[in-house]
Image 1 (cartoon, rainbow, N blue to C red):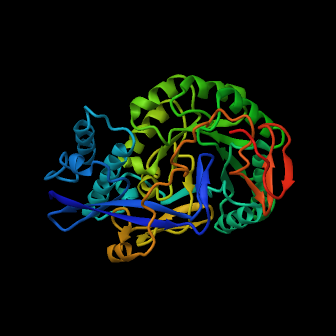
Image 2 (image 1 turned 30 degrees about the vertical axis):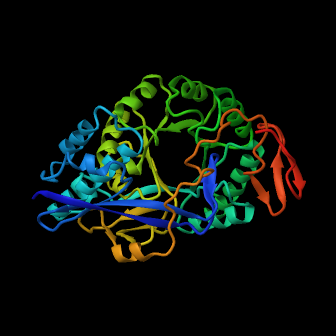
Image 3 (image 1 turned 120 degrees about the horizontal axis):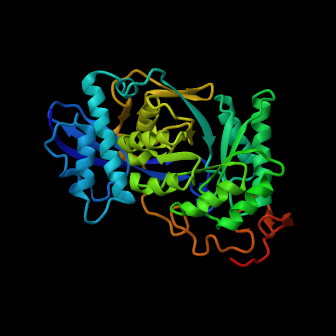
Length: 412
């Protein structure tokens, strides 16, 4: 079997609500989902969800090769980007191609990927993650009520712009999940997407922990700040989770050596081989791993085969437009099917003719770091909505003041 070519597509995830984090919000509720399809001379095609950046140059490393040699082809792709480096979207392209190769390998073996990788149980524990910073109280409760109907009893909220608002929202979701679980205590996590300094992180989390028990605080400071993450970890009760934006083992080593991370994360777009290698590295430190991403199908399969998987992120219960997955969610877990490979199929004509696109990044979306991130004195009232006509202001970490009507001006 030989790799003969590839093609690329971009579809859309329709959230049906605004989604975002402390850095910004996609108010139209649509996000792009890039796809790479790898072709072979035996008619088997593999699917990877991830960026197309510099795909022609990276594909040259695997063109004409046997796709079943996945891990060595992964290293060939890394070597292909040696001079310029493989960070960011380039690493995502490598990850998408890598996932497609694993898909081909498992299809050729006639097995679902989870079984090919040595998994025993197709169930993967999940937590709810609504990318929910743009939701008011009613919409927030409604979103997590839907998650709760699928048996999810742990939730990760987005926050970091107003601590009292974060406290209120965490309590609200805790009540929703507690009621659904008939009194069972839910797990709560907060993700601030690198919005704080070290001092802010310790002060704000300690303030939240006066009334809440957080499982983890995610990306409290910058992703590469090993010393800062360790400072936060020593200063709070919650675990520190990070890693989704790290691209390569070399970026994890300083954090692990500094005892800076308690929950090791990997993004779905970085690929299956990356996940497996980071999971092995984390296991050597007796640390659990937790994949993140909206379409983490490849990592869900891989998670069944590693001894230190803790829980995987579940964002939208619906797949992107034109994508079908052989999995479902029940009793708080992803349940993978028996279709050979990833169990992912795409309807290319539906994707090409879909009338709504979200291909152009917005200047104020969550993928763009705000100019004064980590240097805010007052709460970001223009981004934190407390309900119809109500906004939250006040110094972070202090009681908030609620105002009717338009928000008062604050410094940014």
